[in-house]
Length: 258
Image 1 (tube, rainbow, N blue to C red):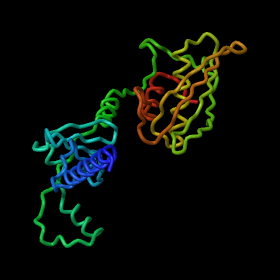
Image 2: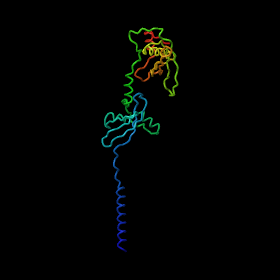
Image 3: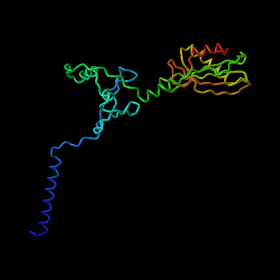
Image 4: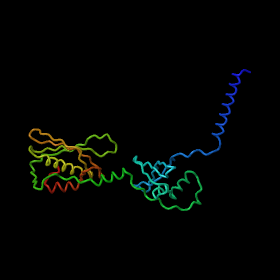
């Protein structure tokens, strides 16, 4: 046998031995290294509806014990696993166990009674909406205290509905008000607002929100076109008109509502 062939056989045997050692080492029965994080699902009570359950995703750090919970609004809540908030996040009520029993046909009759789960804190989105709602102010007529209405200034108003492509959206209407030439913008808008309040009250709409107002002069008259949304429930907005309160103010200031 030549020397070159012997060398080739020797190299082949060495490679086979190394491969065997590698396989034996990979399958030596040792546990795998623990992951840095574990993905979990957290069942929480909704802050706005205690009976409603919200399933959130979360991650637990295997090194620090921190919990990172992805809230429904996209924000991330961080807490310690051994903290009160951490224990509450993984608390399960007896009702939850019974629902699991019904779905999986498990026998949980021997399980002890569990205490109620505390309501979770509001999410960042819920806090922002609450803060915005607190800033809402009633819409008032912008008229000076010395204002005295002149009946001849108000020449009639008409309300027409506008098409709205959004399903379930509030009604969209436009008020076209005619006034005598020379009337200031605040008086013109007050007239359009009062006309809308009267019309909305007859339709059973308790609230309205101003969208925009355009004005023009035509044939010596002032023409105002104001667009509002109407709704039965109080809408979001910095200024919201309450129909009945506005009607009372219109009457007190002498602004006709038609």
